[in-house]
Amino acid sequence: MLLLIGQLSLPAILAQISNIIMEYIDASMVGHLGSSEAASIGLVASSTWLLGCLCYAVSPGFTVQIAHAIGAKRDVRARNLVKVGLLFGLCFSALLTAFGIFMHDKIPGMLGADASLHQNASTYFLIIALGVPAMQLNGMAAGMLQCSGNMKLPSALQVLACFLDVFLNFFLIFGTREITIASLTFTIPGAGLGVTGAALGTVVTEFIIMSLMLYFLLFRSKSLRLRAKEKICFSVKQLKKAFQISWPIGLEQLVMCSAYVMFTAIVSPLGMAAIAANSFAITIESLCYMPGYGIGSAATTLIGQSIGAKRFDLTKTLAFLTTGMGMTVMTLMAVLMFIFAPELIGLFTPDEEIRAFGTAILRIEAFAEPFYAASIVANGVFRGAGSTFVPSIMNLVSMWVVRLPLAAFLVTKYGLRGAWMAMCFELCFRGTIYLIRLASKKWIPAH
Image (cartoon, rainbow, N blue to C red; front, side, top):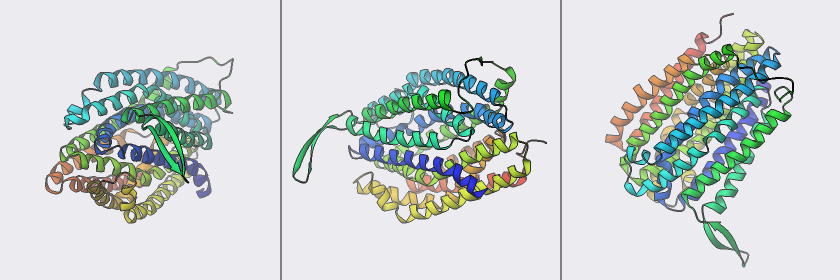
């Protein structure tokens, strides 16, 4: 079972790490333009996450049902869920894009940022919002392929996305310049679009990878590809089940991401250096927790298929094994982050004030990673079982009752460090309550 978990997790972990490396390079590129450019992206980062998180919430309503259908060897039902899910996701993402267009010029002011950041921040958010349909279909197609047991292909395409995004950003962010290698001078063309170029690179990449992901899902997948004689069927029962699974996740994501927006609003009055350090540190910390999300994705697939096959004893064993593996991996990553925090933050900016802020808050956060791992992987377990309501309530309480009030209090005494102390405490609290629920086994369907 450990080997099976590893085989399913490793491609997802590598894909998640490659995504983080892409973010590292993107942030480093923009960071070297200046602290203002870095701060403008950091300002709206939590708002763009909100769009992404709401997109993500739609997917489990269909992917969990697909995993159950495949586990029960009901492939026709699984293929119908693919078609219905993609159509629903497209409509939902169009609504999010409309909301993003309406709000793009209002968000920087609502977050209380300096007026000098407004133009870049609002333009970046607008372009990202226009790419939401591609983000939605990309994520749903990847999740559907993973639930069929194909972890390698979505992961490989996500790795490709990293290289493609970096390639596009290299030419879109910077202007035309000359570089010298071994006494030879080369002219490198560039659009010089700065923050706008970073957003365009991300959105174009999403559309390209979406096209590839849909091609492999709809035309090449052994179990899920389209069949000419199979018509789409809008089953009320399936749509109701999708809603039952997705609405708590949607509420959870709305609560979580709006809390991230509030956290940014707490930090933004501290100045550009604090905003930039906060943004860079979040990107670096994600290198620690993305392996947890990879293992969590594997847990969702394994739990979903084992429940579909009615192997409930196996379900319990896999739940504890995946969670333990996630905690082990993220603890090791946290140790490395603590040791190399100065070097990691130094990759993003030459500014000494930002480096000092970033090093301090990364070392604070390192202590929370084992518990953060527990919440991430256990959440993947619960979603595979279709149990999404209680975890959503747990996240709501953890973020809005623990993190935000504590951050608002500590930031007045310790500045940015105080805000991250609150984050560290809240993640430890969240991990603890997730472990308690996992041990209770109340998340396993009645059988």
